[in-house]
Length: 199
Image (cartoon, rainbow, N blue to C red):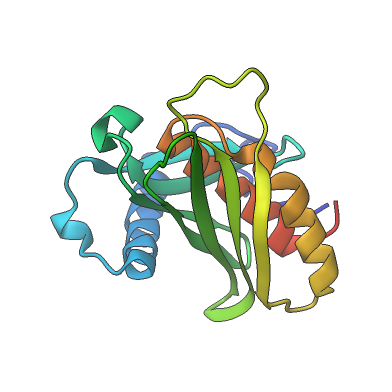
């Protein structure tokens, strides 16, 4: 298993509070990377899109620090199409990506993820996927989503079939909650599947 949390001086690491300069750097560096992926000017950012910083969890429950761009809530987008992004720094590079949701139609909605793993400044692994799930405004009897498509554009050191299976397993299970939660969960899928590719 990859270890991705940098130890904080005087501690053994883990999901501990970040020092303000570290948090500020995460916000600035991640904000620039996410804005580049979305093709927007971060200085002109306005609601309903907002930047968040904190930690999320990979599918195996391991925490990691990240920053995201996402709508504040579903109420703020009123079933319209929306876009978000994520950025997670690693000891050797970073994961960055976008999450784009189509406008809800009936009881069905889709969202697409485009994720990249950089080692240093080199794009090493990349994939995109689409998840089909119920409209978030509907309270289904059973929570279930379906992988609609997985395209591995750059497998890097991995077997593309391993990456595809990993994404297909985890992406639908990380498809619930407010937009900021959904974006953070999909970042966790990217962190796991683009780094290790084997569940």
